[in-house]
Length: 208
Image (cartoon, rainbow, N blue to C red; front, side, top):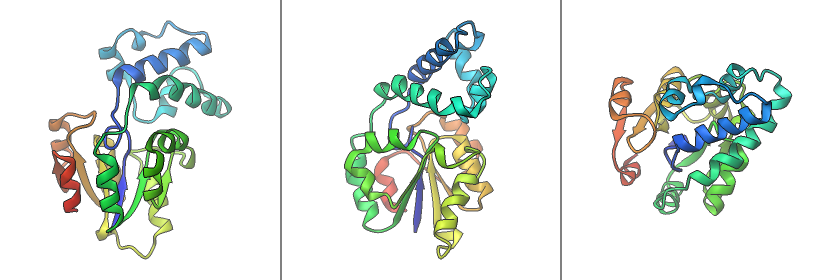
């Protein structure tokens, strides 16, 4: 099988506080710190879009040439607030011995590889935000991966994510969907997207 992992919230912790601070840093860099949606975490959550390019557009940053600069600044502020989960090394190694593994993240590839360390070598493919134009829930990233492995039928491909957009992208690409409950989105939100599988413990990944 081919297992496509989301990253933040699945293999690495996610932090609303870190994201808010990162967007405040971007706002400061642009000279505009008066955005109402950055005043507190609750307001920020309601405003936040999983596609960071859309967020930058809403902040008045529309020049693609600035996206890379702001993405680097985002990770400089955000990454110290998150950690790879302690179980990842062992479980990913076991899955690597049985399946093809890919990783599809809205984070930059350098952030993924730096935090994963040697575990990154167990992924046959890592697709960061640099390689796609539209992020999840758009299926572009999944379809990009499927194009690299055309010999694998979609019935043998899973996306493993912690958010509604991961499941929506998987359904749009017509692959199997697995939602994990230890990430950003709530249990109820995940249930409402009707994933093919919903798991509560990382060890359950070994049953795929």
